[in-house]
Amino acid sequence: MRARLDGELLLPGDDGYGTARLPFNSLFDHHRPAAIARCVRPSDVQRCLEEARLSRVRVAARGGGHSYAAYSTPHNGLVVDLTRMSAVEVRSDGTAVVGAGARLGQVYSALTAAGRCLPLGNCQSVGIAGFTLGGGLGWTQRTYGLVCDRLRAARMVTVDSRVVTASEDCEPELFWALRGGGGGNFGVVTSFEFATAPMPEVLTVFRVRFPAGSAADVLGGWQPWSVALPDEVSTSCVATPDGAVDVFGCGVGREGVVLAELARLLDATGVDAPVEHAEVGYPTATAIMTGGQPTRNAFRASSRIVDRWHDPQAVADTVRGMDSALLILSALGGAIDRRTPTDTAYPHRGAPTSIEPFGSVGTLPPDQVTREVDQAQKALARLVGTGTYINYLDPLQQDWAQTSYRHNLRRLRAVARRYDPDLVLRFPQSVR
Image (tube, rainbow, N blue to C red; front, side):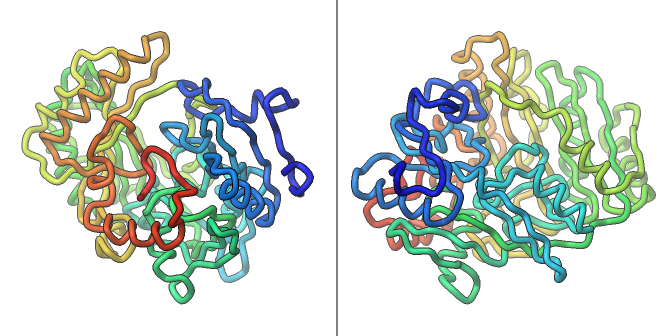
């Protein structure tokens, strides 16, 4: 392969292999790929997939390497590393052509320079490919929708090494699956075309820090409040084991609407807390909403999508007194629901809230963190519903396929059988 690639092939023992093999989640640093192909053009990806078909070696594409279970860094497998295919071009009509190896930080920079925006996420080192293919929840999602809703075409290499462009008019079933069907299931995307939006002139960012012991009251007020928000306001909150809650978000536009909504929030919770807010330009808002993310992390995480909301006290209690696990809740709805649950492979249109149980390991035993997160997600399944977001893949969830894809699972399986009948792209939670 080394002689056939225009890019670089790294094997164990080669200079740079030790760093290149590391995933974002350091709990999986024991993964040692058989080879890492640093691709520079689609023909390199074609050669990687040819090798995978012939040798039956496990193969996975990697953009940002943020796969929660490090599926993009397969042990003893071949990593199709796309990080050198990261160019971002913003055309005069607002179309952004983004290489599949680009990180969100690179995309933010290029779009901002052109006066455009996309509803991207909070962590700048996440890869655009995995983010988009799983749907793409972002910090302005209630205003601009999911990032996959703005996808107009995807250029990709199929398992039989064909280079195709998937769009509404060409390979429409594949294009449907790529918008929320998860990364690594149908081929290797090498570039995306997005319809961007004009960059807003001003946003109002906000934060409300509620004290320890207030989680039941705050969550009881925040969740129905977030459902009724105007589309220009997006919000999330973090509930910690001591019952404190940090509510934050942004509104597209000046502060009037946001301040009125925050007054309603305080009334709904019945808890007094200081309100921090500021009117800022889009670049500053991006820096605020994406700041503080680690370069790498050791963590466990899971997901539940809210179908019902009856007992906020019980929701808060799912992590009460734990050492690591906390809850990250995000308001859905708004522009996300302008499409139906079958328009794209992302199935959770109409759901009001996403909850991510999350635990950083730090100095704690990883097994303890895993137990705490798993305990929380199981309790949440009984309380709020069993839906899950595919970009927060949890290897311990037995029902992940049905709960991640719901009514779209059968159709996704048909697309997977058509484009990868021999299961070349296989991993423990792949569509098959």
